[in-house]
Amino acid sequence: MPPRPLVAGNWKMNGLRANAAEVEKLKRLMAAQTALPCDVLICPPATLVFTVAAAAQGSAILVGGQDCHPKVSGAHTGDVSAAMFADLGCTHIIVGHSERRADHGETSTLVAAKAAAVQAAGLAAIICVGETEAERDAGQTLKVVGEQVAQSLPAGALPGNTTIAYEPVWAIGTGRTPTEAEVAEVHGFIRDALHKRFGAAGGEVRILYGGSVKPANAKALMAVRNVDGALVGGASLKADDFWGIIGAYLG
Ligand code: PGA
Image (tube, rainbow, N blue to C red; front, side, top):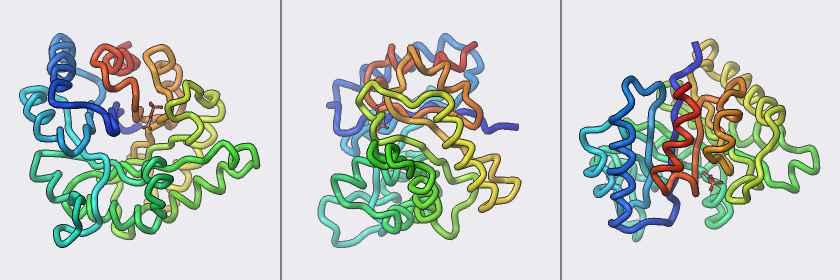
């Protein structure tokens, strides 16, 4: 049986406390729907986790972080640990987003250390992978994604606390998406890698697609084999748009 889908919103460095109103709105939209067939997660900036978690209370909305330090605590000015996100009620933390790999030079080795910290804190790691446009043009997509998956999953990862997000870098924030066949190829490749790693339980690991997911394209992308949900950036900021994407699972 495929895993229960997850629609995850990544607010990136956007939002002030007033944006909690969007969470309240999403909560109202969700309340009108009985038996939601997917999990819903919002990953706001660290400054808003407390506020968003408070706004989400009494709903099925899960709250997560966007990144964390590999250590639990210590002299690391400006950093936030997985234990701190757990303390605020978070269930997931995104690690290895391409913006962190690019802006902060994060390697897959560091991403694996962060994912291990997330899992040690009892949370699920959403580990992002994806090729650049130059890598795709050079026919390197599967090589790059394969290496990122192999090197970014920590040694102790379990199917239950691991999610992979395939996000082609050239599709993030650009309005461009891969074709359904291209998505199917990469997701199938990641599924094979997960089976090699976890055996039959590799089928239980969610593989999210991310990169310019919108209400208009969500249904087609979510219908692709081995796509178990979405990681949504820009379109997660407005409750109506995010709800439109969740709508891909509402029949
Ligand atoms: P986007 O971002 O939906 O704005 O393209 C996706 C992501 O970076 O997770």
